[in-house]
Image (tube, rainbow, N blue to C red; front, side, top):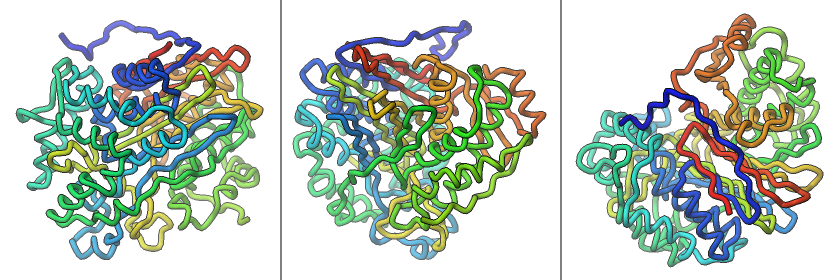
Length: 534
């Protein structure tokens, strides 16, 4: 039986609930979050439970050795958490050049930065949670210890990753990845049960020590020793001195709503710049050719500026306020004409990922995202722990003069971005679309689907998507309207049809009715998405 063969169209409906909702890309993770809600936890506890569970039930996209970001609405205020890690103290462009590198590599220790996800769980639990990590991480521990059947889309990407890693990973340092994720010399098949006792033991240690063991204890010692054994740059003091950062979210107003993102080093500001550009255009109630053209052009311009200016905030040569100013948006908007353009950065005025959303009946809401970056990440698994180390450092520029150039204890340009929507200072809810550089593009499309085109949460996610790739090249989904694709091609866009929808991101949405408190949720049809509701 082919679990990826779907000859007939299917349909999801928006899920409604009053007491709580958890929307994720994996049904087991969504149920884990709901289980915690029913035990007396709040939305923050549910998000932690789902996030930890996703490191086990969707290891193709995230892991214990990855980074995380969160937007949390509680007690009438929106809070931001940046749990991305910095580069090791010992690394530098010069040090990599001495080893023969001419660009940032994808695999091995060079692109490994300090993982922030375990610190995110502990920080969220300490500040806003009700339950101890031992309780919120219990479902993840159980699935790691006892195993679970691999779901269809997960199985597809696991098999793809195995094929890539089998060719790309050479050397004894990668042996633990194959032992952990390809037992028996292959990826687990769809429906086959996979377990990882090492994951379970690591998660238990993180839970019992509130993540201290990961940064300043037994797990930290294993990570540092593994790095040292194979000439890695990551050291014990890099882990010991790491702390996640609470940050002030940034926003733009859009047609009576406020769209919120985490500030740089994340690329959420790219989504906001594109939305700011679109704010100056009249948009019809149904998306037409001109709207799609302007969306694509706005996104191209925002990405050009993001590539030029986004970095660790301490190294940026312009501020988020300057990039989000109306004068800068107007200047960029004026560059959009009738034909497709090749984007160049403007001059601002001076002055592999999982996404989940959770909400409870008390009004707490969480927009949360974590990632190992490129699939399983660096290809390195710390022996005996199940910790797959991410390769987020691959995003650094290999140029000392660039704001995002690799440097010790510096955070790289980060692709993962949680989103949040408010109106008049009141919460509407969390939203997000994961998928590398598709993420800001997904945010723009989902927000416009919701606000401009009045689509419900599920329909806003179901709508066919486009993705700008580079230059004038735009990829569209198989079910993207042909007449619009043809009209865009006449405007100079190089339109290319994708064979499947795997490149167009995976999202979740939860909106809250301000009058009744009823929660309305949608989940991603492009993956094994599920909404668990109570």
